[in-house]
Length: 344
Image (cartoon, rainbow, N blue to C red; front, side):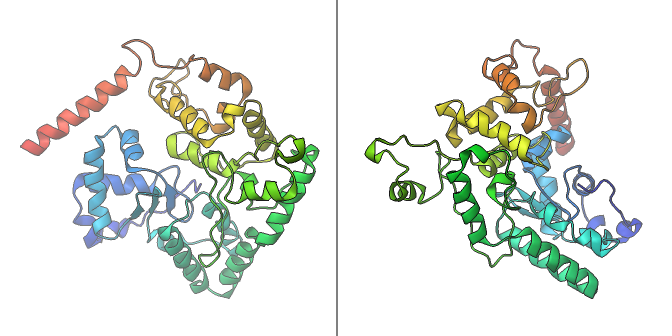
């Protein structure tokens, strides 16, 4: 994530910005300075989650956000939870072509959708407009980040033939094994979507054809761990917790172990329920601070064997009337104050 952002003081001369209400101005600055905003000026977030961060009623945040949206200052795909500030790069120009080479990493953090493709085309045109060196840097970086699909399939087949090498081999960048969405230009074909059991379309037919099924008395191997889908569920259900930026061999091995050690866990439905349970915990989502302050565990912490056991055993479930009550009281107070302001 970009640690520093540039805010042009001439924003106070901008007619669109000055036409916003006070709450809408605050929401726009909140988005502009949000810790999860990438160097592209886009991030994956839901309006409900952002409202929760500010302690606002969801409807109040949605109304203020809508003002900036109507003026084209922010674009939003609610289904994909993608938010984009289209003028961000105009005021946060890359200092060198080397910065542009890191942009594919930022794309990996964003969900694919029609707005994603619009963002890609806009960023590509922007880089090319900066000069030949910047355009070349973008093209080379993007080509490197998007290996050929046939090579990915061959590597996946090779890993299936040599299960003992898992955790040691380094998968091709951009494959589902790296825990982040596979990035590609808009015209590239869409990847197959895993089903509720974590399998990709056509996988069962492939198993029957190559003899890995139950025919002939052979034991059917467990389905591959769908890293990308599980990481996506974590981001969807726990938007306020730390995002996955790096998913290396050690982290993949840990998630794969949790996936395989219990047949019930070899289903995306199980992982959705698991993250939903974490999301209901006031302590695991920072709503009830501990002695050291708010706690926001990341995915690596949540898939640790001891930590997962504690979550499943209910150690962090909400108990008693005091759990999360302070946050609830603050939200209720904010809602009441806002309601009184609108009546006046």
